[in-house]
Length: 92
Image (tube, rainbow, N blue to C red):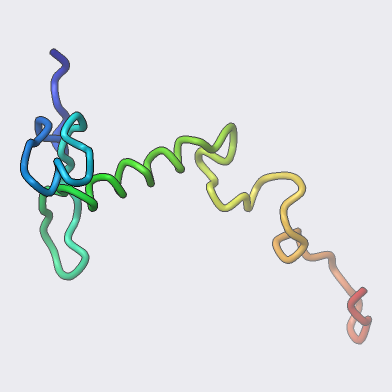
């Protein structure tokens, strides 16, 4: 048996988790959306948490630490380094 991290709980068989099909996944402790504190995610919220985690882990290389591609070659022109222009010179 693997040990659980501080933000994990054993899988749950509650009705919400059964309906979402996540009874095999560890329950996660997630931050509250308003104010401070945290709560256990169950059901659809837990399914969405794991789906978001999978999307994040799908990035490769630099994108794993730079998910918006700001340091990635070939990024959109609006994020390219601005070249220096003389005063009054038009944009290309």
